[in-house]
Length: 522
Image 1 (cartoon, one colour):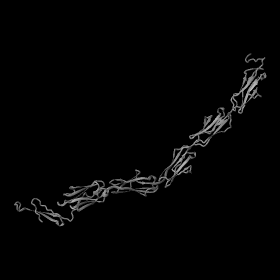
Image 2 (tube, one colour; image 1 turned 180 degrees about the vertical axis):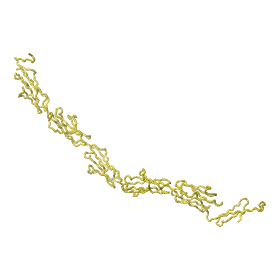
Image 3 (spheres, helix red, strand yellow; image 1 turned 135 degrees about the vertical axis):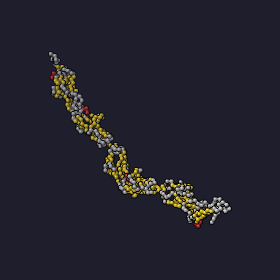
Image 4 (cartoon, one colour; image 1 turned 60 degrees about the vertical axis):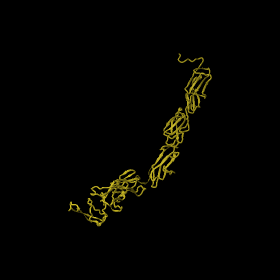
């Protein structure tokens, strides 16, 4: 129907609450006012085709669909043609992405490359997360009453770094050494992970697949494993998983404190050291192959005796098995138990004979390298063996002892007296008075002077011109010497060791009427 204009340039036609039957061709006709003389014959007609659909056009989303990347700032635009002047339309965003922390909505005017005519636009900015993948982002057109007029939806495709990265172990820990174990690196990633790496106790392993097979498992395979999964977005490391490998005790050995050798009476601790999984729960000990009544990992010998010396072994046992250590030798030093001094030849000994003394030592460790000999409590000599041998000499007579000594101590024997018998020494005849005597004069004494002798008991004999006199006394007394007494006299001393005779001495007897002419005078 014609709608007259105001004549002031407003020739618009507003179709409110348009319906489908409002579609058609509308014409705008311009007719001059007949009351005005100018342009009386002016006529003009313009046609406009109005298409009306049952539903309004859906909003447009920008940009075109493309995969998003987790954590990367992303912008979506939504626009529709403008509403009728009296209509109030709004665009709203809906979906999980709109609830992301930091997401915000702004009014948006699309660039000419997006929309070539004025539109209503809104802009959503957010950082997509992994759980936005395959969710829907909706842009809804609402009327003034808030009701949905139409909407557009897009399913989001979000690429994200590997997540939920963890190691699965088959069979589960603990396992026994020698078994086969499979470690699998499980993860969720988009796009799927294309590279994997593994570490054990922080040390990188030469594996680059999602699965590692340990065949057979060794004790050294036990520890904390991690895997890393990598895709085009990033790399994620798993939490550690511990592979416990059960194995029989290994590196079993005995530690000794203090170290050998030790001295008898000291305290010694023997410790059975081992590496086992699970830890060893039982121990046993042997000495020289004989089982000992000990069942702990540590044995204390307090105080150490000579019988404690020898070769020790320990055995460690866990639920997997039993392992025996190599032997360790405990050397116990102890001094000689005793020292006994014996004479191997008869005593007393005659001078010049051979004397052999033997020092018999009791058990000792280590054996003394030599024997010390004391004479009259003064060091005399060391001998490499137990025997001291020497020629009998008065100078070597005395009280002897022997000492057996090693690093642990010494043993001293009881004393043994060594007596050397020898014949009387320095036997000579002394005349008193000296010189020639006068026949019938005063008495003359001949005395047998005797030096040292062993044994000191001796007898004396006298000889006149080589003939023994029946005089057993040390002195020979001539009361009134006669010419017949003039002779060569000698004495002899005898003990159990032998006999010694003095050099002869000549006794001169002078007659009173015939004085002796001195030698050398004519």
